[in-house]
Structure formats: C-alpha cells, structure tokens
Length: 364
Ligand SMILES: [Mn+2]
Image (tube, rainbow, N blue to C red; front, side):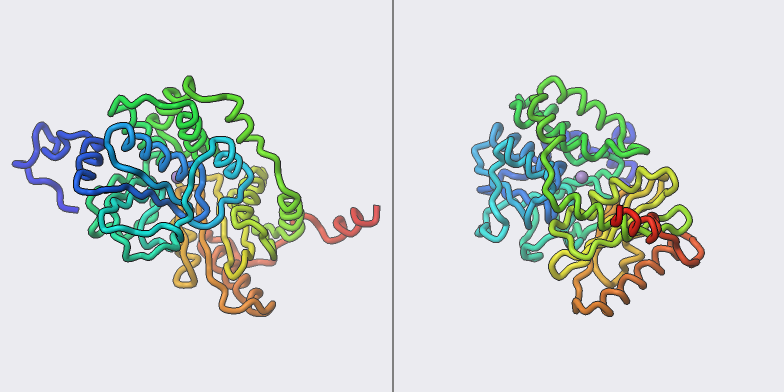
C-alpha cells in the first residue's frame, strides 16, 4: 500500500484517520438495507462474539435489521454451550437469500481463504479480522485487519466502547469468552488492547454462564479421539504428530493439539484427522514468533487451504479418494513436509506410547 504523501498528513496522521474506525464502519452502511454477518466455517467463540457484538452495535445505532449466520456445524462442546446457553440466534448460511441491499460483513476471517462455503462472488462490505493469513480484500469498502490483536472480539469491543453502546450481560459474556479463548495459550498471543477489553468486559459478564461454557460436558467421542491420538503419536525431536482416522467433529483435531502442546518435550504439535471427505490439520507451537500459519500454508501448499496465527494454525485438504494407500501417501507427504519445514532430520520417529505398553495395558 502506498504511504500517504506529506500533504495528506496532519501531524503525521493521515487525514482520513480523523474519523474513528467505528464511525467509518457505521457511516459506510448508510446505503444498505440490511447487514448480514459471516464468519469462517465451524465458527469459534471469537467469530461468534464478533458477529453478535457488531449486530448489537448496528441495531442500537441504526434501524437496519441484521442477520447472524452459521457456516457448517458448530460442534466443539464449549462452542455449542456458548450458542445454547446464550441462545444465539444463528441462520444457516445455506438458508440466507442474498439481497442487493445487503452489507455483508465478514469477521474473524478473510475472503477466498477456503474457510467459507457460501458463494465467493457475494460482494463484501467489510472485513474485520486479526488473522495473518492474507485474503483477497480487493473491492472490500471497509477493511480493519489487525494481526497484532489477540482477538477480533477485541476490535469489536473497542467499536462498542467508542460508540458508547451499553452491553447486555449476554453480549459481554460472549465477547469476553471470545477473547479469552484466543489469548489463554502460552506464550500468549495478546496485546494491551486485549487485556483492556477483558478488563472492561469482566464486570459485565455472567460468571455462572462463563463457568458453564468453559466446563461444557464432553461427548464420548472426545475421549475416543484423545485415546486414538495418544496411541498414534510419533515424536521426531521436539515435534509430535498424531493421527485420528475418523474425526466425528472437525474441531477435535484442535482439541488434540491443545492437549499435546502442553507436553514438555515438544515445541510443535500437529494433529491430522479425517472428517467426511476432508483431512483436517491442526497445529500448535510453544515457541514465540513460530509463524505456524505460514509454515502450515507452505506444508499444505496446493493440496488444500491453511492459515492462522503465530502459534496456532489450521488447514484442510479435500480427499480425492479414501483408499488406505491414498491416505497413507498423503500422511507420508505431510510428515515429510513438516519435518523439512521445521528443519528436523527425517529420522525414524518414536512412538509417544510404546506398542508394548499399549498391549500390556490392554491385558492388565
Ligand atoms: Mn479469532
């Protein structure tokens, strides 16, 4: 992007900066009749809280109706609990009938990153996000992408504060949880603005609801999945890779790596699993400035889509066939590419749990 010329600057600040971002976001909506919110497939708390917060902002300050959409199932237990306990009203993206007068606002994601199932040609009014993964932002009138922020909900909270909008307990709880889920990993991917937003929201939240969401009851498949991941994990130096043949819920790959990255002997955890006709990949790193999103994008390459943040990333590959050999070939390719990307010698890995131990456990 070209830097503004000296003439367009006032005290080093471009003149267009005179308006606050939330003012520009709102005034750009004038020519539209309705606002439709979209986020990435399998929405997470940051995407949900952001849509919910912006819808409240618009409904409080304008007459425009809003629609909050859901792309694909939301199955992670905590995320389901968030939707259920807060009674979030979500419209399946397939049921949206798109109008010419719609301002489509994408949050916590960017266009053409392979994380959406709706028509890529639907024009977007705004993209509000914090991912490092670049999307195609051409023709988007309002762009607020800040990868230095820990959560999109932080940006949304700032908009709400700027506009002096009162928050309900339900909204504050969902924004709080959206930020919390993004910034609790260690090392933290958060900045002062995230902490300021958390501070502001905390007093307004319903603590019982938050506790209910954080400690959501887990399905049987959660434990089956963890067991399979533990039994299939191989260590290569400070890298652990786990395979789950059948992921009943796509988000379970992320649950596995959230668990594995706590292992003191590893700096990188990867889990791959098959959900329907896709191979889902989730990555975590315990290193600061790990560039996990970029590494995963290189590993996946043209096989599929990937993206993320410094220490967390996700991706997926559409499977051409589900034959055992096709999947084994893909596994070998991914393993080789990861080892190369992380500069780990391609020696034979060792099992996290030795086969002998697994058999002994079965017999005892
Ligand atoms: Mn996010």
